[in-house]
Image (cartoon, rainbow, N blue to C red; front, side):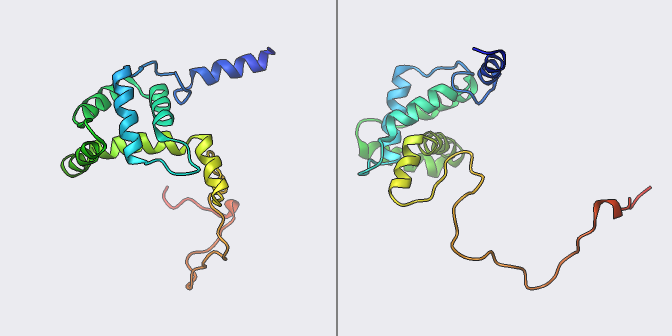
Length: 165
């Protein structure tokens, strides 16, 4: 490995966004619970990957100890006896503790929709989804709307003058 490649790899490994950086793994039981919840929140659909393994891997690789503890508390409140029980528990959580529900939903949605296999499935289904990073966003087949009234004006940098002192 060249010096530059070795340095890049070391820097990437030390970055907080790199999978495994936080080293706060979820227990097998928590991963099972999270997987079942993910499959209820994002039901299986023809042509798309199952949510459970994608979400479990994403979360287990990126959660930090404090987030893991919060997830453990939230997952512990969700009845896992059946799919209907999970759905009912999620509806209750959303109504009674919307902040915790939003946190759980974000982990599930990020874990699923950041997966390359989901981006591929979206493109195969006809979407122009780019995946991360998204410098282009979604293509829009129309001209951007322009303001009807003129507001402000352009001033070259060298023409800018300090207002105070």
